[in-house]
Amino acid sequence: MTRPLREHAQIIRSKNAGPYRLTFDILFRDAETFRRVWESEAVTRETVSRAFGIGSNQITSLFPVPMGNAIKITLRRPLPQGAVGESDMYGCQQHTPLLDLPVPDRG
Image (tube, rainbow, N blue to C red; front, side):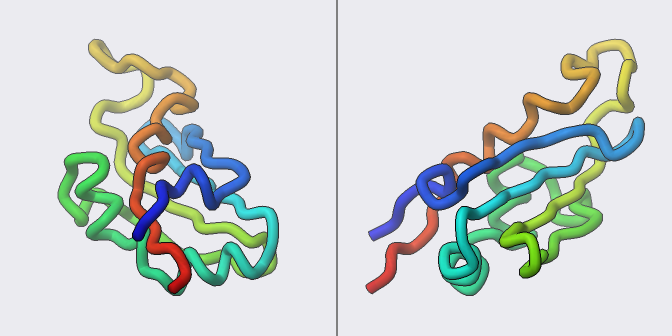
């Protein structure tokens, strides 16, 4: 049985990391939830790249931040910030594909 990441995380957000990258923060209420999700391997380069429909080489970093009960992800923007056709100048609406990442429930 799995539940979506949004049911495990307290906050899932995105923002600019300069004009060519987006960064994502997945923040958990407590260390136990953070540890359980991180150890489940639900959030990996492969699962994130599938969720966004991009190559895993577009992900420039993905790492845990245990002191903050968080997972941090950075990826290349599909278009530079402010380019013609770019639709989210601040990068704050790009986190949606992460909401439904399946996370295994404890057995």
